[in-house]
Length: 406
Image (cartoon, rainbow, N blue to C red; front, top):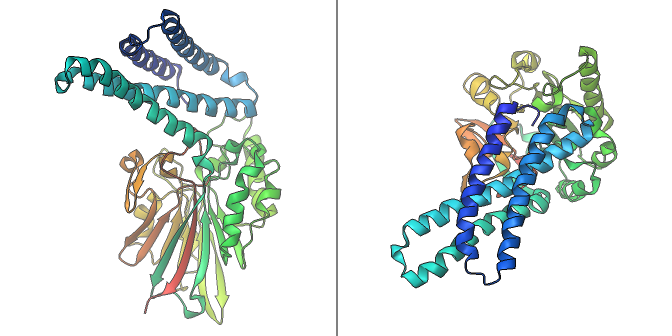
């Protein structure tokens, strides 16, 4: 909420009140079916106590935000974000559905409409509420392994069957030091027995202090041949106010040191050549590069300078827009691994069909993409940011197997 102006927060509060007033109007249409006047009154009072309390809390949090302890601030913002969404969205759906049903009640007889419309309206509100609650308390910890095989003629025979696990967007501050919540993800990753583990950015939300105690957890990640990482847009401290430039720099250095302490080689606009039986591949890592207002710290030309002659290249670049802007048709990089979008932490997915509102912002937002002989994989993220839930967009562990195309 710190990044939003007071005017924007007031507009949000107005929208909440407007939806709640309308929802309360239709609620009376439902509570008329209850015989007990005490129960009806209790429902009405609880409805407005919650609404007034939520709006007042949002305003108080916005006004006092700068004076809060950073850890408490981050936790409260996330909780109120979740509370606001879980209240606003179900009520909005309830209002829309019951309004449509009421104004098209010619489909029902008068006796049917008196009973069916309130029930359907109530169900339409409760279903999204329970989905959001499930996404908040369960789904965001239901880590899913996505298996993909990448076939290319450029892969040296010595690297046939190379196994790579990609993770991204941990946002460790959002876990609030609940270290056990990552145990099942660590176990799933190690069970895959990867040759390499790569991390494609956004280790934290903003601050190095979010990493306290996490080194012991991430040190359990095992890769046969190595672990590599890059920075994401949240790893630079750009979304915080710092007393001095030196304080920001110290924060950045502490984050970079964390990677070293957990066995990850941090690639900062550089590449590493991996040799096997006199054959080579290159793993390239660039700093964050995105379309403004996202910063463009990444320098792909610098990163490629020493590996131009290596035939098979893997690029780690946090923001998938980098692939469209600087990689395809401009380089000979075969595989790019990105993250950043989180799949918006909300989507509809059924078999090969997937849809999320994030598609209107990012052309490439989740999964595997191909352009001629160049591939992009966008990881859906392992953690979360802001809205403390995942709905139809489970946290992802990507398992890639590289094969030589005959």
